[in-house]
Length: 170
Image 1 (cartoon, rainbow, N blue to C red):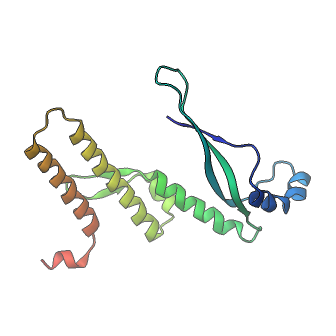
Image 2 (tube, helix red, strand yellow; image 1 turned 45 degrees about the horizontal axis):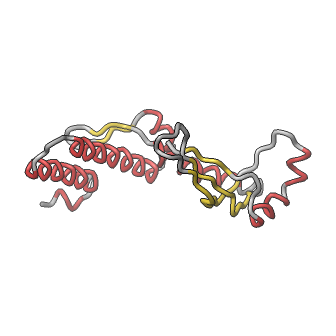
Image 3 (cartoon, rainbow, N blue to C red; image 1 turned 90 degrees about the horizontal axis):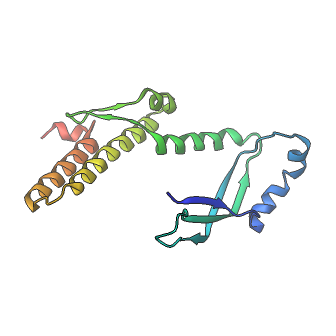
């Protein structure tokens, strides 16, 4: 796995945002501030194949905006949504029904868009894994691969049409 490093000194734009909060951070040790950050890839290290070293990517903070106290909740909600989208878990049944993990359901907070985002992530992960399993079969025939690809396409269509009123009219 590639190791990530953050370059020590933020770019000028990011430093300007931090300056506004410098005294407040100094006066209150352990204070957390919430913000939005942009990172830029500035360097990579690719060891030779016979070296026992990790490949690395170095990033620099190129832009940063920190929230005022009244803005923090909105930024935290965005962070929670991004975390949910990255980490949603559940299972996909034989009939295409998706069961979200209890932890994922708690993260959605009952918000319909969050539930749908989690459903989509779980189903796409399932069908991506299915495609990878098919690709891993040695000496698979063209007919077998077509069958596997058709199963993935049908599965994705089932997920997309879940709850679609037009699908019931057929």
